[in-house]
Amino acid sequence: MAGFTHTPIIGRDPQRFARQGVGLVCEGGGTRGFYSSGVFEAFMNAGILFPYIVGISAGAANALSYISGQKLRSRQIIENYVGRHEYVSKRNLVLHRSMFWFDYIFQTVPERHIFFDWEVALRQPLSYNAGAFDCETGETVWFTLDDLRGGSGRLDALGNPLGDFTGVIASCSVPLMCPIVDYKGMKMLDGGILCSIPIEKSIADGNDFHVIVLTRNVGFVKPPMGHERLIRTVYRKYPRVAEALAQRHTVYNRQLALCEQLEREGRALIIRPQEVVGDSRTSADIPALLALHDAGTSEAEVLMGRVLDAVL
Image (cartoon, rainbow, N blue to C red; front, side, top):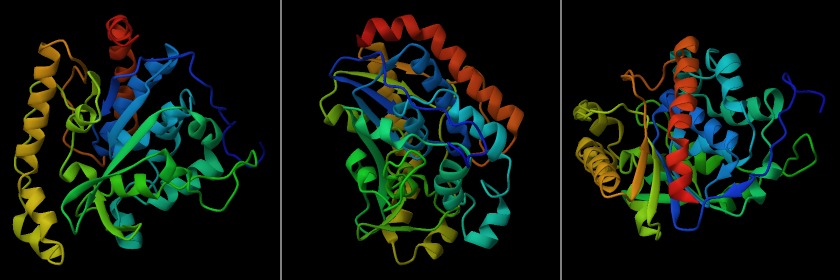
């Protein structure tokens, strides 16, 4: 496939699926989410795909390269693109009103530099759910593979229709850092506003066991966000955004406690960083992000025996 900066990694179908009733639950976290990408590498190395995946923000976005079966695609993105100002920077705030320039991340990179295999991703028989926050109703809205399958009207390098990342972009649109996304008649922001760890979604959809990938280390407790006056001013047309952000730390800590309770009861397995992870979700420190990614792979591989025993 000529025209790509990097030799395209063609996606592969999984060797096996986890049993029905197992959910893969993915926390967001901006560039901290590359830890999850490392975990997904371990799953691809083991040849296993989950029949149900629910993710928020970076968790939803990074899961796509796992669904498409493109080993090391995310690592190549870290090595070659995250450090560019087009990916994440204050300059983007001036030029594009967003720390993350989503046209670059979800269009330029997959269509010109590091191929994304839509054909493999969209043929997988699984339930994929990316959560975004509806600024008008104050509720979480879920986008599926069918929403991505809606298409952009363009073709990829193999002649297959390009999918539509807009629902995932909405899920990734961090408040104060990114603009509101207008999609399907809704005004959308980061799903982590109300549902940072979507464990309750996995339970509500009938799963009896959950593999939970977190991007915060053991012992983390989310503090209040602060900036109340700024948030009320910026989102004065959407008061439910400010209301949800004021309670975000409480909701997050409740969801985290539920995950840990389920693990104690033998109904979940948590994979999360063993070392303390910094607070920044916009870090472009390439060596640190590569180390975080590789830690995700190695730490998941240590647990892989337990994972496979629980989900097969």
